[in-house]
Length: 59
Image (cartoon, rainbow, N blue to C red; front, side, top):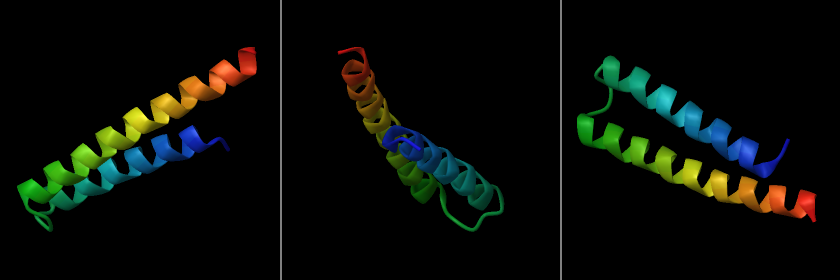
């Protein structure tokens, strides 16, 4: 598996877990937003890794 795929997977798992924990009132709203923000940052990092990997493939 490629690094960017693992980062996308981690970001998705974080969002799903945070949503489940928020719906069951285990975590508060600011913590949910923090986890959501972290997952967005991970997605941007994964996108940049994917772009670099695709550039290397086409060279």
